Amino acid sequence: MRHVAVKDKRWDDHYTRLARRERYPARSVYKLQEIQKRFAVIRRGNRILDLGCAPGSWLMYAAEITGSTGCVAGVDLTPVTISLPAHVSVHTLDIFELVEDPAAVFAQEFDVVLSDMAPATTGSRGVDAARSYNLCEAALAVARQVLRPGGAFVCKIFQGEDFKSFTAAVQTAFSECKIFKPQSCRKASKEIYLIGKGKTGGPHVRS
Image (cartoon, rainbow, N blue to C red; front, side):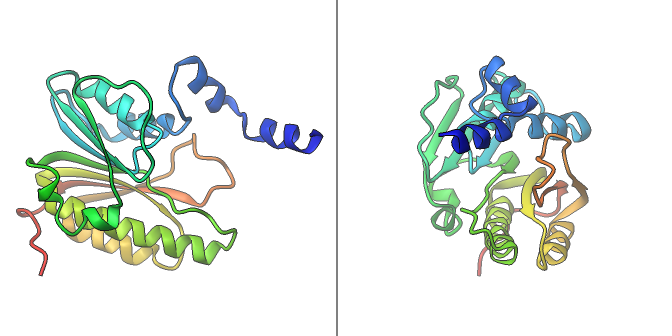
């Protein structure tokens, strides 16, 4: 019992306590807040797609910014159980199924695609980074298909040997690409975010 208590206390940091006070289901909301403050990717009235949306903190924050004139759609394998505003919808789907034909699920283009997806970690840095890269590839493929020209993309990736190639892929698809690590990321984490702004061209057609 003592070991469990110590472990829980270790993860109960300032951001975790702040999320509880502000009624967000996870501390990850503060990463998106930092990204928004720095890059202003979300605007009032925007249409937002949130990939890997459970437990719902990014959905809540994005919905606050867009307001009721916007819309926010979330996708995750895990159902989202929190109460959400009327302009938010959640789809319980596998990202690797969604990538095949997102137009069959969403009858609209989006202004912003967010991805905070992360794999189930194994403890092997190389394996975890490779799995993260696979999720990021899928997120970028969806973004290419559903983002309007000029739209924005935010994607979390674990740093590893594929990081440079994924950065190059984002640079190809967007006129601007920034690398950013929010202060609210845990110090031991290898996660980092890529922010692509100004999607180039029209929807990407899969061959």
